[in-house]
Amino acid sequence: MLQEFHFPAHLKNIGNYAFEDANLDNLILPQELVTIGVNAFNLNSRVEVVAIPASVTTIGSGAFNNMPHIKTVTVERVVPPSLGTNGFNSFTYAAASLQVPLEATHSYKTAPEWSNFQYINDGPTGIVSPDCTDEKSADVEYDLQGRPVNRHTTGIVVNPATRTKRIIR
Image 1 (cartoon, helix red, strand yellow):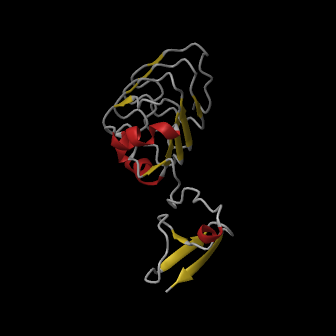
Image 2 (cartoon, one colour):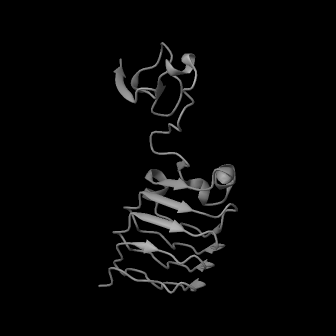
């Protein structure tokens, strides 16, 4: 059982099925990596964080599939790398946070496969640091989707100025 692997610093390519079902705990990819092959890390179910360096241009189909515990995927590249079909697990698309350069948010939200992520540059609450610099906005509360609360709102709301939560019925 391979729990940890230190990639050579100048590694350019990770081949197809290279670390499939290797039981890795962590993925720290080298900064000069260019391609990640088909199913390269498939079935490494203990991995929780994936950081993809800016040098990566191509990620093969199923490269990070069957990895249901991924919580955060960080991609440093401004232009979305080509991502093959089912590059990540459906659980990852639904629950993990995809962190990309801020100026690239729209590109990832519209790119094939990357657009499957529900949370791009925001967490599962959907609240992205509302501006609370003036008195008026400091009194506004937000629901868990980051929408301002009105008198018809029900559910859990968050006041970003005080970071308090309350239930409205």
